[in-house]
Length: 300
Image 1 (cartoon, rainbow, N blue to C red):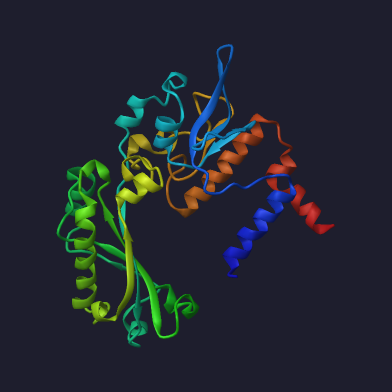
Image 2 (cartoon, helix red, strand yellow; image 1 turned 90 degrees about the vertical axis):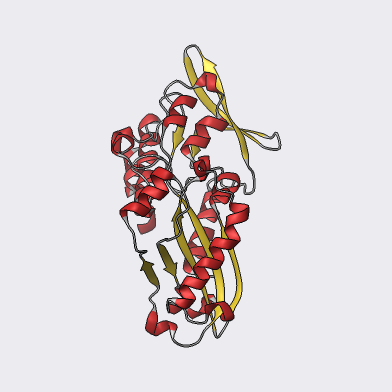
């Protein structure tokens, strides 16, 4: 098992030792709310199969817009009502192609583990994606070839890769059931004929792709956005959705859609921010929050 897998397994084991229960493949249908006087309090969740799970605290790491718009009855929402969700500009989406191909021995000379391939336009392409919301004929992409670093990620003599293209979110109205195969073929032709991966189309062993439809329908991301609200000036910092719900007590949010924003470092910081808010609201000992308590235990 790789390092990441072992880390996750260790976390799950410790979580269960502390009395926690991890339930996978359990889609949430509703965040349950109770009223105590004028106060609205999150009391748990209801799964898609009707199972109700009670909880003292509810933390959603799902899409911010989907959390409020689809999981919480509008009557419980003032600050995060449907109008705010509708008016909030959502970030772009992604078209990602996963593929495996036979190696020809030249990849080490031409490519790196990470390769960014910029198209002929920059500002106008961004306007196509964010403003006009059209699928342009040109594109930029991020090509990821991890087998250049770790050959065990593919069978001997092969490479595993993916390439990622920024595309408009589903407010564009693009029919991805029609455009998916066409765009995938265009990208393979580009990588082949431009010399990044010569002969790629003949060397392909397998491939698949995800579109904004995957983000919207599988990941429940509003309009298929990939990074939450677009980081405009009026949607950044304090103006970005908050990690502690303004509408409902004991409800917290975490992840790319909340403060401080998208990207791995920001999402990790979001987790720390949310944890500290919970600790503050429930008077958790500062030694636990700072990690000193766990350090003392590890020294014993």
